[in-house]
Image (cartoon, rainbow, N blue to C red; front, side, top):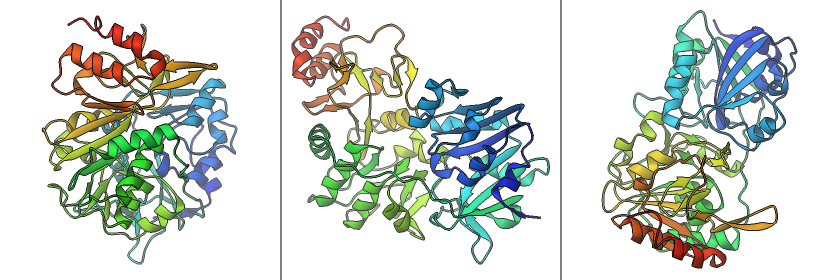
Length: 431
């Protein structure tokens, strides 16, 4: 029997010693999490999830730990202030078995209010939690909390993956007016625009596209929406405002070889306009991450082009995308899955994009490194990189020798560092 409770009443069902599971950021039940912060009686509360999108007081309470699979700015801030925030190294597909091993007694997620048939759409997030949501619904010893807000779009799944749960299977329904978090569309920097213009040249008629978050993918989408080519498919871990713009420009046909007719994603994040556009939209379908990020599925798409970022690349072609000086910065997500799977056929391309330099303590630092220092944590190994793009050019690595790759990478470095890197490229890595 479904109970309809306030956020505070639902939070009271969590024991002082307990385990709570929540999805990635867009699926967070915000009102419920804020209500948990109103309690101070925690003895050993473990919460597992990823990518916090709001300040939740509960994570600053004594005896509360948060296991995160993907850091955002809030995780980094809380960690740096001494909070009990710990990173769990796993790509997005491995979130599901990790969550199953933890076996939370309480699972909580955001959704839409029940429709006339009693179905709650899981809205902005399919991800890796649906298995545990279903198992919790079936287990009388566990509690499924669903926070329903009409501010969330009603989105659709596909086939046996309905991307919804019936109200009769929910233990606790919390009705709020919580707003999903919004990612704006800032004006791109000159460097981001220069990179995006070079990236767009790789996206030809009929390509299937995967993009990540940030100024470069957003600018790429804008250029493609305004450009002459189209007939695109979309198969992307994250569905962004840029993906919507491609649809609105009539550039998306989704004739791509797998899941034809639909843009495929596992979560969405962007502007309020995006969420309103997604509401009831049958062109976009949300599937669990084990399908969306499967290299076997990705590689079935025709002319697959993946567009992802990195923090640094060395002359061997190794990419660092989730750590800075060994400290956790973001997460692995689907980075390696899309980088690897998008290069399995000659017509596929995998692009890693980064500005050539950054500023640290007032000093310019190259993001193309000769050798990474000891202790550097690699996100993606050298053999999986295909194309690296900076504002100064393009390095195509596939099929090239160790020496040719090093020279190509040095050639797209910032001019302040280029000559030294070109000299280093003659000796490192050893051939």
